[in-house]
Length: 209
Image (cartoon, rainbow, N blue to C red):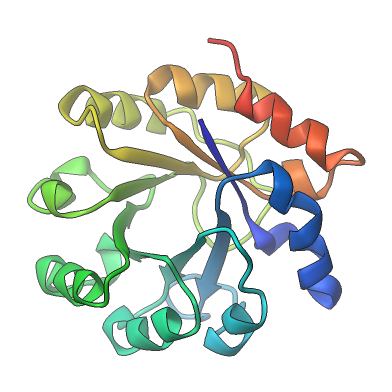
């Protein structure tokens, strides 16, 4: 089980300190990049990504329109994984190839209302599929149970794929996601809102199903 704290819920006034606190216990650092167009929020760009680069893989989730214009900048700033949204790409295969050509891992993400059928043609080309379990844009939302069937279907077809679940993850919803087939959990407020962040991460890593 891999745990990827989402810095969307961290204190942006001391991001490096926040990351350093969780770094020894987790596997990736998840960075939500939002443009205020595809989702109703604006977060950070490549300059901030460069400033927070640590020893852990930086997992950049591009919740933006026209992601192909910015991929190279994020990779140059230290991104190790680039995940794009099906909903913002006219040519997924072309953009996935663009990511792969930069020698980083490529991922594709879908929103809760988006069918798995829309990414069927690219699943064998990516390193990870990110299933949104909330509508994207803000942290602290409630996990949408209807995505569990989607996770199960994806896992049944792809045994080796990293299946990432992002949104509303806590100890209870983690059990549901893992039972369905997820092997990477993105958690923001559950980790950064905890008094004991090490313990919070350990609970997710050791979920019993």
